[in-house]
Image (tube, rainbow over all chains, first blue to last red; front, side, top):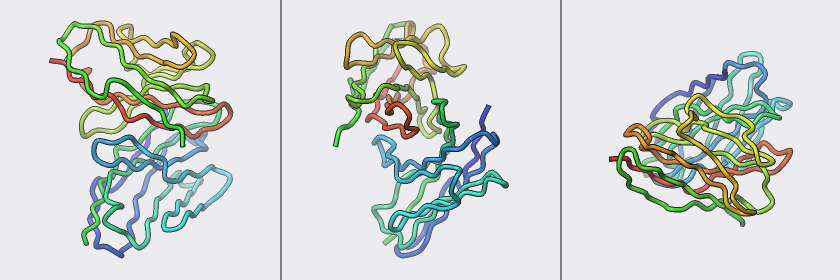
Length: 112
Length: 113
């Protein structure tokens, strides 16, 4: 089955810096890659997703890039703010199948 | 904006007892899911449900687990005889037909003593 690896496990940045979180996946059939943000004790919330027919997607300060050949995808957050502090999870799935396979998460801490 | 809701938010039970976790998916969604997250670990898929039957299940979802849609709005996860290792946050999620995006509920924190 699919295996998703996520790095780093923790990331500390200063407010205003950029943050990059990287994930790799094993199943070349995977074609949908969402990113979820989970604040302490709260539900995972979708922040951005990308499908395998595009290489990059941007939404304000957040962007995701996908390299299908290398089977990796990354989350980029620019101009980080303290409210970006949370655990971020990447995931992968195959369209038409329901299973989301998650990475282990990255705890992002943005210091003022 | 419609959201997935779950009850209870917290449940404490004794080992061997049955628990039922309840979820109300977003009203026009027809795919439903249960995931669990052991404290400090990643979110793990348990089961998906569509058209009144299980679509997929993971190896975690053994005979102790069952799911049901008892009426037009609720979706339940039953654990027949809880074990200590069932202690986790259980998330329900739902999605529209033809859409991959899954929307998560706030979770039920289950503690088995």
